[in-house]
Image (cartoon, rainbow, N blue to C red; front, side, top):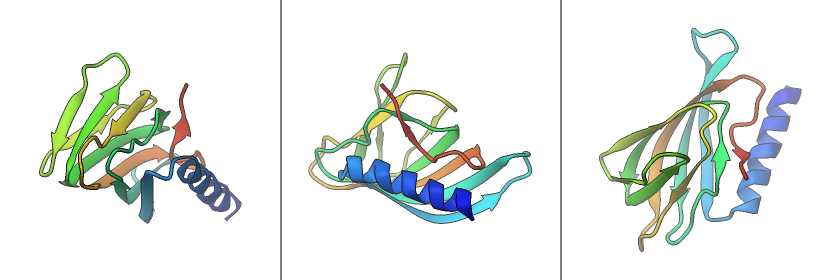
Length: 124
């Protein structure tokens, strides 16, 4: 329970630092890989906002429900994804997601991450 409170506090802190993104955790479940869990979330990025450069302690697999998003992964060309498309962020990759459009971007995201670690951590 202590680690869940820590993760929740850290997620809220990251969101507070960046009001343009809202991650709503829908479910957390253990997976067959030891020390890993699946975190299912609804993510919304406001028009003109970005997630900010960050990393995850595991993979992010996202599906764009609405809007258009620029995904910037360090060392890779910018990827533009639209409603109906998906993307995968490798574990530990420094990345950002930018909404340069006029409508909110809505994502269904699954994070396969290390248990007991924060969902996202800011990256320089």
